[in-house]
Length: 249
Image (cartoon, rainbow, N blue to C red; front, side, top):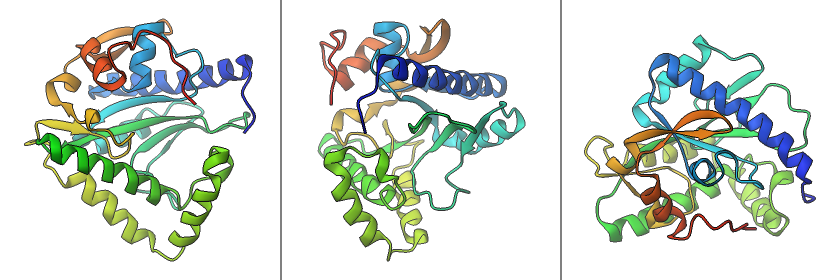
């Protein structure tokens, strides 16, 4: 895809913010715990909004609240917004739900990722192996129906090969793998939490108290929940120098 202009990025961020506010309103109305996640936390702390070049947004919910949020969405359905419920969507093998705009006039995949926090292994050496496996298998499975148009040019040929191979694997088999990873480690007994997709790094296995204890922080003039010890969270994910802006490819 061609490089986006500043105006195009701003337009995308405005639409993402609409999704974020709708998500927050639903959670607040039904007392559902949530937190901004990954780069959205970094944006809140460093920029009080979006990272200037960022074109996505991420949030956490608890695994136990996944169905509760789905029910709450339809109860309070925001106008112009739809839920991509992976339990109902055909030709969708994502490991988490998303919010999208019902009408999107921009040639860009605008969505809010709603990551459910699942149990992770407690031992660091096991975490390293398991989260790498979870990351890689997630990329492979969701490639079956991914739109190659939105993939980076350097990855398109790889995705095309995987899509061809997965054509012969029933969706039911792939969904069983997603569920197996979601429930492999009892979230109530686990000392660490993770998401089913990510960057495949051990540091993404987060101590429960680090991620579940939250505070309010400004994001585009609206207060959202972020980890209470946001400094410790961001150092774990992005390193000690997280306040220095670095634009990755």
